[in-house]
Length: 356
Image 1: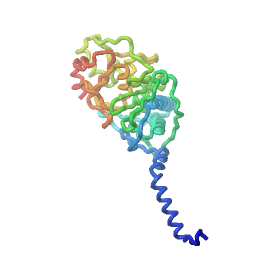
Image 2 (image 1 turned 60 degrees about the horizontal axis):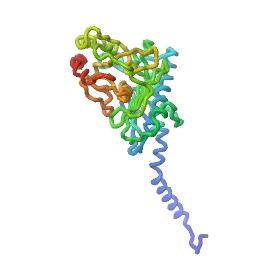
Image 3 (image 1 turned 120 degrees about the horizontal axis):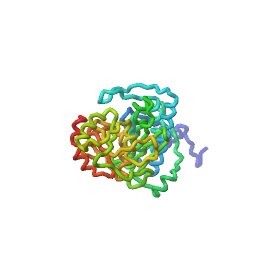
Image 4 (image 1 turned 60 degrees about the vertical axis):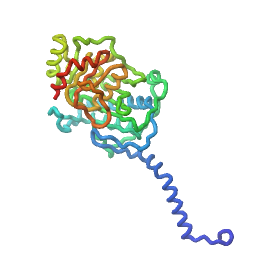
């Protein structure tokens, strides 16, 4: 019996209970959806972007650098393990614009899974673009322990907050797949880049087989440096193995017969050739030139590192590269450090024509 002689109807109690549940659902449904999104990380085909939350707050670039280094190294572990097993499960994704097989291996797939889900679990609200397909049915939740390595803390003492919606992450889980299948291990890298409003601000290049990692943050710090001198008059030019002939012809006309052409695999390896790298397998060059279409996940990390050290990476016509929108650039690229970059652009006008 209720107080004051009022009898509670079972139907009325049920109605009020249901109304209360409706109010609670309305208040907390958004929160619960956000929580569950951590465990339901989906993906898109190569070149696609993971879904971005409408209001992701801010992220700390110093923390993103720590996770990027860890992701590149974890991916590198997979790349090395698959190569040493000698079971690559190699297949073709189709043809490149130059007519070559666009190859993929188990190393690409497993490295991609480790790298993508580590970054996505740590920073669920940022956009991530990756070379390989992200399979939602094969997701892996990898929890970052939120520990920032001492070498990063030493160079970057304070947090650097930016809006999450301004951030785009570019992952290359295995750069130089062709060379990987040929067991040319020194060319292989894993890379992570973070761009803010389309500008590359931090980059990580990891060499799985020598376990060397280079990283840098624009207006932050780095664990790698430029070399003390470069030869601008008769430079050593590092290029893709398939482009050596066409670049050599123009380079000899421009710089003279003393110019050297270094054929190499992998955009990450070519950028490291411009730097002071503590790796005995790394060749040295003064310029890096590419004359055809190239994907942004191949070059973003190198662009960020060069920019942090005072270098430049542009199209062959000298235009800055934006890391938003499409996943590739048409105008080739020229990368240099401690040189008059725009003077080099003016010297090499025929390279862009030869690429087309």
